[in-house]
Image (cartoon, rainbow, N blue to C red; front, side, top):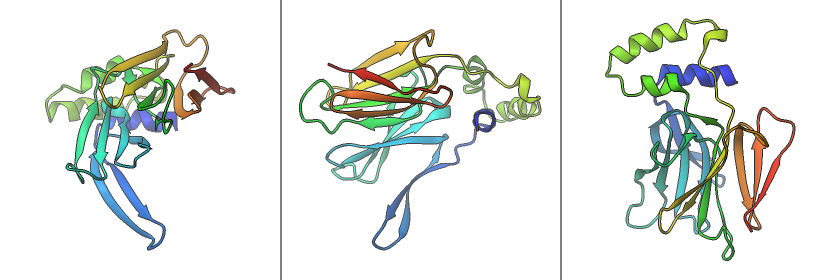
Length: 200
């Protein structure tokens, strides 16, 4: 799985989609497409928007389910607010306490230098370099950086707060975050434990 995601990052094609499934009619509707490795999704407590982590572009997009911008997709967070590649996302449904009105983004790894170099290259130069990188043996594939991080976003003001363990001393490669009762429950694909961060 890890190697497949590395190949997807090197390939650099936006093939992800955001889908809506209606269990009553069993119909599937495409809400957004051309997403860069669409990964974690979260719905706010009023169900007015959906956040989608686009892991390989280091971006979180916001799809408006209702309201004046209904049906539109916009960039919500990018690499100016994120310290690495986003993965799992969750929004608090609490009405009071430190998590009220906040959403959380799991950052499993710091920015991989090779991918950072590839992103701004013009097309088709980037395709040639990406093609060469994909032919490299697995052991030469770009390495992920040990890191532990959650980004908290105030959905009213847009202010961000970074909760990080830069050396991954306590928990590394955090891919999942769930907020409940003003605590963050953290999951990792490389460890054998789950983490709990008390926001109080």
